[in-house]
Length: 343
Image 1 (cartoon, helix red, strand yellow):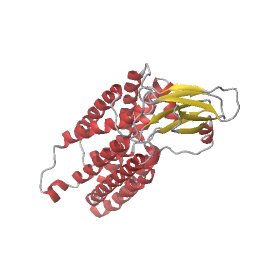
Image 2 (spheres, rainbow, N blue to C red):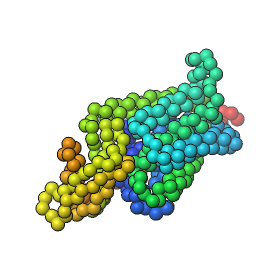
Image 3 (tube, one colour):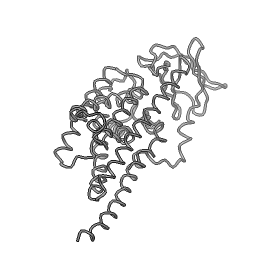
Image 4 (cartoon, rainbow, N blue to C red):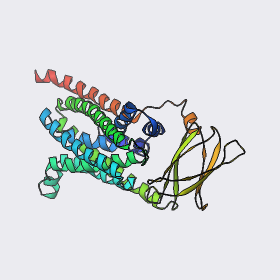
């Protein structure tokens, strides 16, 4: 399982971002589509999955699993709903960096690191899981706010439905984890395996921390105003960001076609979170620039959607689930080999 955690690191940059399809579902999808987006985001959240794996590692009784998962769920539900509805956010790189620390912390705690290396008792685990749930919920909120327009009249219902989807995704992930861990617990080498796996959690947490801090440093060195624009068919949706990745409100924009067309230029103003929406002509390239001309980008409508029509895309959570389930095969093989020796 150490290999699993380390294998996830190269995918870190792409796994946790909202896909173009997810953005479209959140903007104009129905209830089930919003719920599915929440489930998909939890199942594609490598840091959330790794932390849950650490929490599950030494829990054998159903009542213990229920207790700790409930603490985590209550924690992330509070901040997901409250922060999103109130529009409270922070730089997503820094949030994810703190979440990476929680992954490393859980691996360290599972190895009895506080007693073994620091000579102190570990903090109350149930309380820490709740606190970490608050942090993870803030991370989920930051991602949700990146795709939800602040002026959306259905904002609150979308937050609730997204959270329901997150819970369904969490349950699905826990079922796979419990199955894999239970299989390994039947093997005599379980203690060695658990030690190696939790060292892998620490390594993954540290690796993700470095990755997020590097992303933050790169973002800080970017121009003062950046565009985060997505197009699908004849519509583009984008956000104007400052160097910290925060949306800039009331920024006046000029959108004009790069070539002669029937589409006229448009003047827009970003909403309270820096978002704007524009509908134009498919396959037409547009220049999006601030009214003062200090920042600009070019977008071709329809190019993103068409580019993905023929791709074979394996969702991240399918990749993780397959790896976890495949880990059961050597566990069962080892257990069968040990049974004759016991007789």
